[in-house]
Image (cartoon, rainbow, N blue to C red; front, top):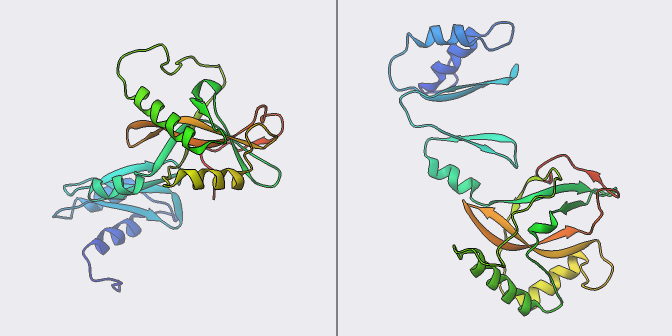
Length: 228
């Protein structure tokens, strides 16, 4: 067999190809051939003619696997730090995604998760966010803690990205205009403060969500993230 590369890992892929039957991966035959090998082995093998099967060899070399919910893919690396860096920006909220007839995503969140509603005074909104952040970090129960009650609606995780901006006195009004958010007036979205989970922490962040009732006007997306 003609070589295509000058690396030892090519042997693993040749053994897997040789063990295939009718274009499908045969794990039993592949394992029998692996017993003839000596050395340190860790690998992830997929076959173009059998894309539904992925062989993961967790031998005596480092291998970390993580599920990426937004990309719907399994990521792997020899060092978990690489995976942590890739997945660090995934932010999660509780809600449901809908889509307008023109393909615009609309997020719906439980009313009990809304900590505050945006106003026309950006600095006041920043102060509200700081107050809620301090309140959420307070371990002692207080009367104004977040509600833990459910609504019975099948809410699920919705994944996105968390962005930070400076100069809120100019940036918040600009983003509000971009999203068509007009406090006190008719608008598709409203800006609300929502608990966001990221990197095993929970912090309040501003999101644009659809006005109720949106379930009767838009089609459910059926996915935990918007396919961009």
